[in-house]
Length: 429
Image 1 (cartoon, rainbow, N blue to C red):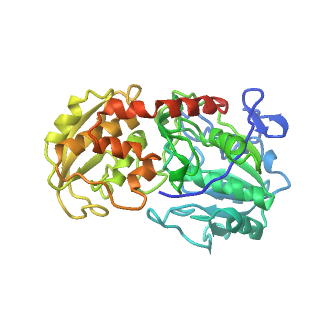
Image 2: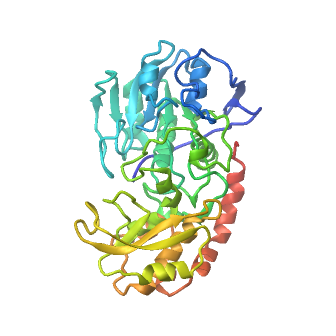
Image 3: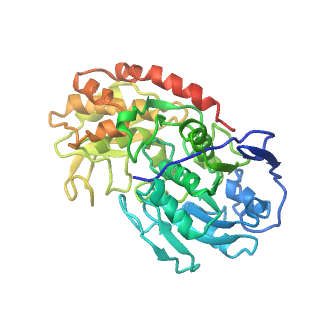
């Protein structure tokens, strides 16, 4: 996928506070506001209230007197699966004047690498502006032309550095600062928990739309926490006026199914929380000639190519990777790599989510694929796409040199440790 970037925050103070960098924290009352959409009670068993749920419960006080634009996509829904744009548009307490769509678009009609362009939303009549692959002054000009005072961000992330919505966040924060706009982030869960950061940290030379700044491959943060880090660490020369609305009821150990919230696919090839669970590791196969399962019903859980047989699954299982087993699998992608061809490979079956390490697993699968399939090859590009995804050339060169899984994982531990120290300052749950 691909998206945008920019950020700042200082969400500190009492638990449940609405915090703004450079301003006094306001109490975020769990029980405040009028009853109705957005309170997080519309779904039986829901435990987590999203940032939008709490904003609405507070009567949208944070947006009072502001002309508002929302950066969102189909994941911006309430607990009763109404879209937040539809809810706010129908509420006279919000002056909603614009919507900004990322990759795949506001209503989600575009495939990977596409967007919906500029149009008027048929449901609300609101102007929808295309932010995909826009940043800096051009994106600031869009914010200015829209007439908004405050830009609100509400998109569900998947927890991986190369899932581009967090870079849409980064780009929009940076451009909002250029345009002199306030920026508000409505928090949502990291669907694969916020327990730990994993994997290599991006080297600046590999910065791209799938990784603007040096964070870990699996960052273990929520979008509001990332906004805080972006603003303070990467945008400190020109930070945006940032405020965030935290969730309530979310714990760092929660997988998505523990939240009680509805899952809406954040992109066409992220159909379930199970996809997100493995994505931070198996997305690396986008950088190879193997299919990463696009064009199947289990993208990123199925991997393979013509000519691979059961030896790969056998080799992968022999690694004894925690929390996961591998099944010999055969499938025919309906689009993307090896379209219409029967390919052999593996399906991941995660049996212990708490023990499972997606990045170590991805590396183990690269190592065993290289060793068990003579035709293994990296996808050709400049720079090599695997290097762009992993944020380093070390993974590719070490796999080619015959290094084992533990040796490759060990190579990034120093950089990961430094990132974890920085990350810790911005954790809010």
